[in-house]
Length: 216
Image: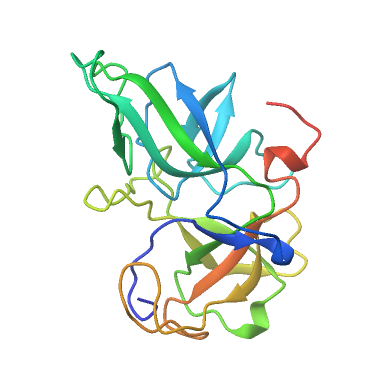
């Protein structure tokens, strides 16, 4: 609800430029080393030596390497269930490998043309469309924030105070603002200029790993 602070991370909605969108292509990345931080639905995911982890601070374009997209769920097997069925879940708790989880996969929407809906931490007006912004409220790292363990959703939000043009090093471009009668989390109005405006954004060029020449 855009009149209440209720961040839900980055939610894929469609592709830039009216490209055909069928819910987003998901790529699964296998987690083989213990995760220090939980990974929530809506978190940014990066790769380091092929191993996925959550991003713990707002990306800086051209500097933060290895971001491959946004988590849209996980799957794994619990300790002692190696021959059982996988568990599909919204998020992966911290320390999963040490807890005995096996066959852990992070499910990621990795299209660099993906558009996402994200709630801002303050009011955003239509004057901000086309400008850049940072993200905030990350789990892990030096932050004491954590995602919502009830819903399994991230609590990443758009940092309204950073909105700028050109803002060339900022994480996302504001493409549009939500103007509809319902939004993620329930049937509540969401309009430009709300106290916690729902925004539509795209990861900026050289933030996503597929739009930078530097490997990870």
